[in-house]
Image (cartoon, rainbow, N blue to C red; front, side, top):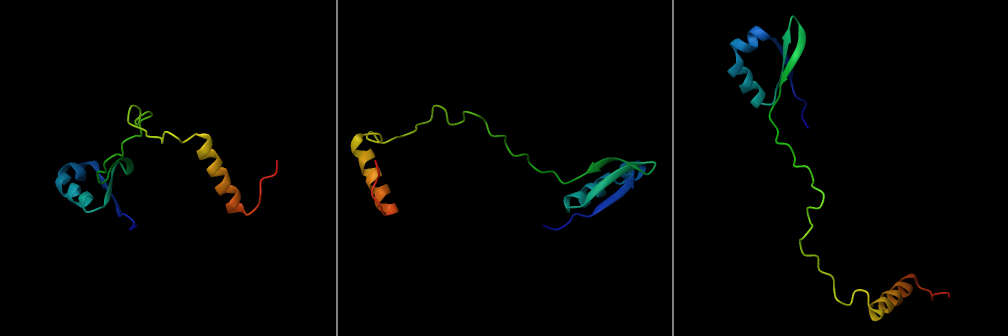
Amino acid sequence: MAERTVAQVNIHEAKTHFSKLVERVEAGEEIVIARNGKPVAKLVPYAERKKKRQLGAWEGRGFWVAPDWDSDEANDEAWKEFWEKIGREPTV
């Protein structure tokens, strides 16, 4: 990402040339506004804020689970596949 150029102007210059400063900011530059040489404000390009994630956003929306997801047959099949995958027999 390219670094932004930062320029400092005094309040009088900012008031006099505000529209030109906004054009510079639109081009990606940051402008620091100073009073008596001391920074007091900054003009930066506008960026949309990301929406905050909301807890429970999926509540009430359908969540489908296979009807046999916890059946004895499905569990036995899953265990069989697991033990075959690791290449040994279960120890009881």
